[in-house]
Length: 160
Image (cartoon, rainbow, N blue to C red; front, side):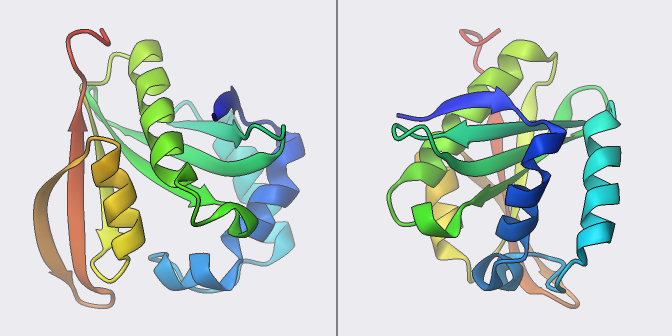
């Protein structure tokens, strides 16, 4: 069972390590290793931004297991970014983290849908999003990343 809380500045080091994990970098659209000072400044600005929401997942051992970030776009949409801690991967945490964070996100905002963009080769992430209720919207070819899959989750009337 995953519980969620809002991210705080104290989470910066965990998120820094998760972001620079080699598997995470390989699946990210920005694959370069992020220097610590750059990350700290970005994270501080992101936490203060009205256009971003962060949630930290806590597992049943009371350990941080991942982070979810929502980048708000326009009045009704957001893009989701998820990173599960390397030590917690392969346990089904990703889909639970996605599902719970989206339910919380919809309950706290007026947004109507969430979009996920995932490299087509990242089948584990695609499956985790589909298990959480996301549907494939379309695919496209990115000039640098290759094939990308876009998925969508619409708010249900029950959640509003």
